[in-house]
Image 1 (cartoon, rainbow, N blue to C red):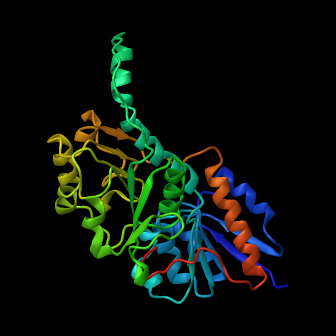
Image 2: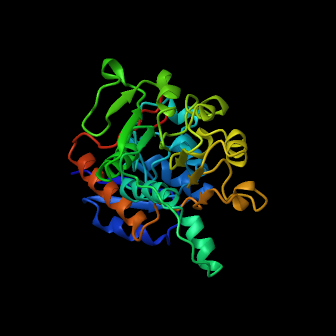
Amino acid sequence: MEETRLLVLDKPDTPHLRLLDRLTQPVKVDVGIEPAFLQSAAPHADVILLASSAAQPLRDAWPFARKVRWVHSLWAGVEDFLFSDFANSPVPLSNARGIYKRSLAEFVMTGVLYFAKDIPRMLRQQKAAHWEKFEVTEAHGHTLGVVGYGEIGRASAALAKSFGMRILAVRRNAGPGAGQPDGIADAVFAPDQLREMLAQCDYVVVAAPITPQTRGMIGEAELAVMKKSAVIINVGRGPVIAEAPLILALKEGRLLGAALDVFDEEPLPKAHPFWQMPNVLLSPHCADRTPGWLEMSTEFFIRNFDRFQKGQPLENIVDKKARY
């Protein structure tokens, strides 16, 4: 078998890259991000591994990567990598879609239970050493709506289903089966039925990627149809929810709360209103950072690399036009 040249875009001392010693042989691995290094290494690369989340190294390498046959990202979100020259090329891109879905689904249920059990009130009373009984609600019997019914959305729906929740979902390709159950969701809606779905939900999880079509898809009009008792949970991309209308709805009590792992600007600025809002559960984009999370993603790449070496179809191919 002819030697495969793998170009890894990251710092050479990155710990999880040690796992690349397990790659199917024969392979030669080049690791680096400096422009001069990329200019010399990229012309030989058959495969490029995007191990760093920064997009600039791929931009620097791409003009010289004349023989590359496959690019893989250790990250699920790939929008920053899809600059026009790469996006319009025939070279396939695969990603880590679904690798972190279990942890993100657990964060979704954390958001549900945080508000259902009124954890903020428990914490306030504990801090004040104040004993006062109050009513809490169950997740069971309530409705969870899923915006972005991909790997993360389905994992969240499945976990919520185990709590006895009713599941509604919006799916881009709902097709003629819209409105019909799919085994997890009790009903599936087309994108133009989004507001119809939102009006029925007690909890809404946003798990959509960021694309021109999804940016701001949860805006003022969508928030306005939601119940005052509803909670919105974002584990997709920050800009899918229009931030200013969300802040206003939370301040005015037109939503019960929000559990947010992603934001328009990260790190979240210290002066941002979210920090001080009592009805916001804020996670610094770490809901998927379980022990060994990058090792899991690297192991998936190693399995995909074996498929590449054997000429088998690659898993998790990205639709570069759809941008996910």
